[in-house]
Length: 77
Length: 150
Image (cartoon, rainbow over all chains, first blue to last red; front, side, top):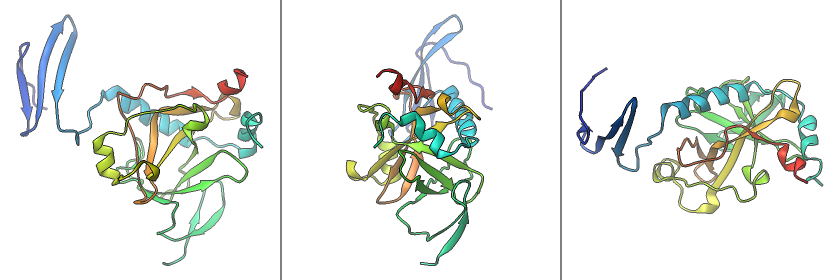
């Protein structure tokens, strides 16, 4: 992993079109600005990890669909 | 197209062809299942529920539901990256599904992942699971809460 030191308002370029700027630093919180083309997906790592964990749980679901339909008995017909 | 046979988790053995309308390709897989690219979408009879069965791995199948059945005004932005990836040209092509998590033996505790919906273009038959910080719905939305509100 490449580790760089930056000050407030300094930036890092990744390739030609992704720019990461240190917007603000307060204690252990760092505010980061990201300029990237719309085709690049940006999200917090935790969100991705949570969804991964939820998918793993969901894939273990095993139930008779009739039991599931009971949850909706008021809505169905 | 050649008839293929598939062992499924909930429907036994089924026959399908690769160009069936309900065979979808997830080029990036799903988070946690990145290696699984091909799925077949199978509705349960007389039910709001459906199943997204992996074609590559018999034991991987997700229960799914339309999120609009849970929250009628459910909404989220599909960003340009997803529009390009799935070759979406108009809204009518988009199928949105939420994956259900059903705790063993406790179907009443079923939750729907409304934070990361599956978005599928039914024309190109390409799909993806949208992970976006702009979607503010819960990852574990209780399915039964709708009934409790009545």
